[in-house]
Structure formats: C-alpha cells, structure tokens
Length: 243
Image (cartoon, rainbow, N blue to C red; front, side, top):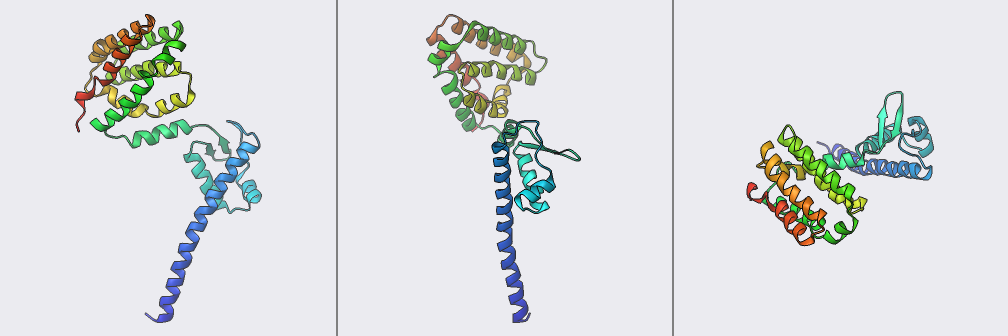
C-alpha cells in the first residue's frame, strides 16, 4: 500500500470518527429541543407535534436526524408515531420503566430478595406512624377486597397480581406519588418474589391469613402487631431463594 493511500484511509477514518459523535450530538440536541417545544407550547397528551417537514425547517435539521429523534422519544414513551398521522404526544414513561426493570431482573437471587424486601420494609413497616395517621375505613375495605380476590384467584400468577394490589394500596395510603411510582416500577421483581415457591393454594391459605392478620392490626390501630406481622410476611419467602 502506498503512503498516499494509507494516509487517505487514515484521514477517512478520522473523518468518520469525527462525524459520528457530531451526528449523535445533533440527535440529542434535537430531542432536547423537541422536549422544550412540548413544554414551552403547553402541549398535552393527545396533541400532535409539528410534521416531520415542519420540524426540519424549524430546527434546521435533516430528515434522518428528525426521524432518529422521534425514534428516541418513542423509546422514552413520550410520543407515538403512526403513518399519515405523525407524532402524537403520549405518556407511556412508566410502562417503559417497567419494561426496563423487568428486563434487568430476569433472575432473583437471595441478595436481590434482601434488597427488595428491605426496601419494602422501609415503606410498609417503618412508615407505620404515617400509615396509621392516614388510613381510612375505605382503605381497609379495599385491602380486604384485594385479599378476597387473591383467595379466589384461578392461578398462582393471578393471585400474585392481587397480592401486589394489596400492598400497592398500602403504599397509596402514604399519599406520596413518587414513592408509589417507584414501587410500581419494581412490580416485575416483586411479583417474582411473591410467586416463588407458592401455589394457588398457598396464596388462598397462608398468604391470605397473613394479610388478614395485617388488616386486623390496622383496624385495631395496633402498631406493634402491624409491624411484627408485616415484617414476618415480607421475610417469609427468604428460604425459597438461593445465594
């Protein structure tokens, strides 16, 4: 290979390395601009974004850059893109977070169990004062309904969904949307923990009885009984997980 050819190829490679970050930066920049557009113009779920051509003209961007930006916003759960309709604003961000969390928790080890249940203990046991201050008879009725649905479920997976609704209702009582959102993001791994080592009969007997005892403590405003029963309930699955 001649020196001239080698230098030409090196220059081409250097140029490619320079272009790639620039291209990525252009897409990231456009994503930020479109998000600002949504905020500044007060666009809401169901509203349409400007067309591809309008976005190209408005932000002096190429069609490829606009399309890549739309792909990223779609992955974020911010827009839905359909042929002949264009980009419509949606809010599927929680679903995207759930999908990501589910992908990253394909297997649950004993260490994961301890981490997740330890976090749940902070919310469902250590927050006893806040729970007892805020809980109403309506909340208790909803807890009983979720527990009954779990007992009558047709499968272990269906029962685990009702089990999760029971605990989510308790989190709702705290009145903190950020905490509730984080709890829901953890749903895939919590369901794996709930269903491990259990049959439908286990849910309708043992788990049902544990929930009933927790509801009884809530109704009686017995803080010590509630904390003991909830903590024991959350730790019950530990033997079913390997190191």
